[in-house]
Amino acid sequence: DIQMTQSPSSLSASVGDRVTITCRASQNIGKYLNWYQQKPGKAPKLLISAASSLQSGVPSRFSGSGSGTDFTLTINSLQPEDFATYYCQQTYSTPYTFGQGTKLEIK
Amino acid sequence: QVQLQESGPGLVKPSQTLSLTCTVSGGSISSSYYYWTWIRQHPGKGLEWIGYIYYSGSTHYNPSLKSRLSMSVDTSKNQFSLELSSVTAADTAVYYCAALVMVRGVIDLDYWGQGTLVTVSS
Image (cartoon, rainbow over all chains, first blue to last red; front, top):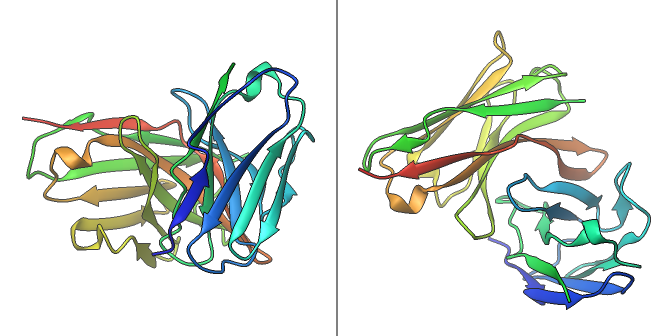
């Protein structure tokens, strides 16, 4: 299985900050990398697919980059509704594994 | 807009079989675009991909669960189902059904059900 490692595991930030979350794959996955946002008690929501393609309706302050083994999710100008847990997922090969998650908390 | 809804028992006894159904609305389960997927999340933990089934019945399971897992699809009811046998407390989790889309080289989980908590306990 491809292992996905996110860093940091948790992050404290303030409204208006810019934050970056990193996801590293244990092998080359090209651009088969998705990012999801999950709020407590809710299902994950797809934010970005294919490493950098923003889903319809997702605010432009979210962006993704990377290819191969190293990927980043950046959130510019954090808003109160952005405080949540973020997961990366590789869809290069099954099982389509997820990172362990990054919990973004209000400072 | 595809919508999914999980249903099934919230409590299962150890060694028994966990059975869940996902009802799809707003789209056809026979669509060639979607692979009908199950994912689970242990309490307070991350996401685990269980597997998927295509409308034709072809499946792809997580090897870690394959020996205990079975999925099926009922096109007449627009539903797909999960059965996990010989459950233990380690199978206690929120189970999500989701629609995996494979289009032009992009593979992602576009639609999710709300999730259902299944507790394994005597």
